Picture 1: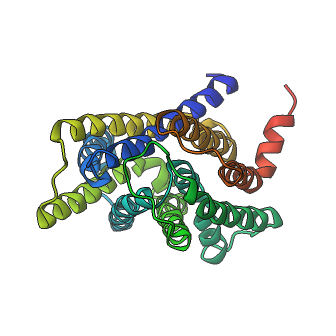
Picture 2: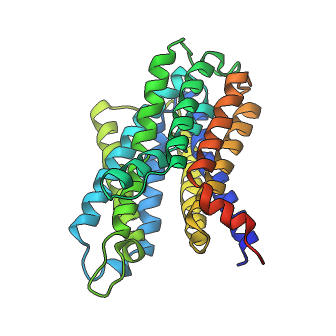
Length: 311
């Protein structure tokens, strides 16, 4: 595929990821929690990546991969729980914007633990990302006019939940970063060899957490059929999104990530505005603008080189 096609694929991948947030928002307004939907999503991811990664696990799976996958699965279960809180407190668009800023903890980890350079652009991206979250807290008071959920004015709580989601959503990126730092006896990195296995184990851990939660709390959706349908939608978005994004590996990572994240933020905002009639206030627009700017700053050098390189 040429570069133009790969950029389009990264865009479509981001749009697929948007289906997850939209489904969560749609379900919450109808008595279906993100937890209920995630039961189906995690199972689909486990099956899909389990089949794809079967051969790579034949020689044994390093303990590090297992630990990283388990930690990631638990963290994503935490996000599922926090999504419920966030969707009760405010609109979807700022929430999804914060979710897509998960590169911030990855940059911090790479700098503090792995000794990678923390540039001025990284500092600027972090500052703008935090501004985006604060603006999201301000925007929450003008949430959906068409939602059936309560929207109490608790901007500090909403902002704290968004920051927690941002941090937890950085754990998958940190795990992949760690996998890229280690190689097997043949010099093949864990990231190259065990990506599918990692995702399969991650979804297995996530499925175990949500099933345990459902069993202990005896939580049931208002409509099992509707929860299953939303689960199919989020499964499609998750599996297709990850699959298409993995096809973009030949692009510079910063380019693929920037296009993917920006497309997901904008498409989610569009769907939320149309489907849920979210009020488009100045703070709402500023939240999205700051999120996109933070992504561009974090990936500035690679993105600039890609856009200006010769034929």
